[in-house]
Length: 334
View 1 (cartoon, rainbow, N blue to C red):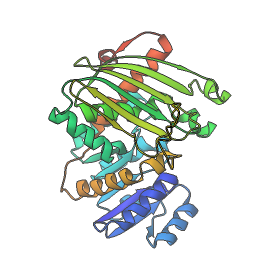
View 2 (tube, helix red, strand yellow; view 1 turned 90 degrees about the vertical axis):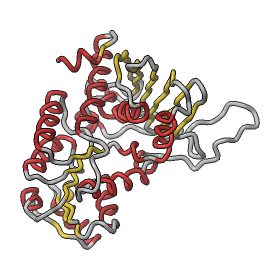
View 3 (cartoon, rainbow, N blue to C red; view 1 turned 30 degrees about the vertical axis):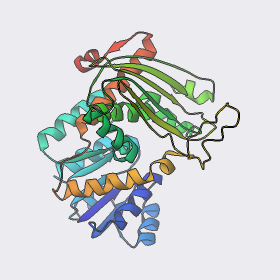
């Protein structure tokens, strides 16, 4: 398999190392708007470098991995599909709901396999909970708690183009709740606040958000997100059921101290970034994509899945702005 990669920033460089290490990848070709950076990575890994996206798409690649800056995703995904090349794209596929709807229609009409980068679907803990829920081990699920707490905020320039905390951060929780339960979100009620840097307010965003979701079977989901969790990077899912409960992220790295006397759990070390927390999952999702590209498996996370998660995020932003609950039917009909 010959795989092309667009984007050699932090996540792109990590993906390049992963792809270069896979036995199923015979050749890797990389490119970036910063050709010097692409050249440096190419030299480091001993892989080919294309001088443009057009050259990359014309280089006889069997699969395309998009890890460029978020504003470039929609155009690159469209180009990959137009060329008939199986494509992996980091989330989000587009900046707006209307663009995401148009891309979903485009991809589904084309029949070209596309996988979206929601890496939590490949994390061992989330997969274990999914299996338990689907097998009925927990009985009926009445409550889910999902949180994504970053240790420190990203740069102001990133926040300005991120789309907001629900679209950028909590969208991973929205996707994995659908993945674990097999259910859809019916209504949302969201809020948010700023106590940190002024650039969140300047961008019309919040540094901390919370949402109450109700699934289509009545299950309640409590979602929280923050850019300020000084104790460490804390991503968890707790699924509470009639017969039992399971949690993801409740391990030695848990970024939470007990106030109870004599309790020293967890001993650490803690995670300090999403790259650290989800390294194995990132590797697994790219191995899965190579199988998709060679026709050995269907996409495990489609553009339709990305659209569903984006619509929940859109509903949360609308709820935060309006101060009222939003039904997902309102978003789908918009």
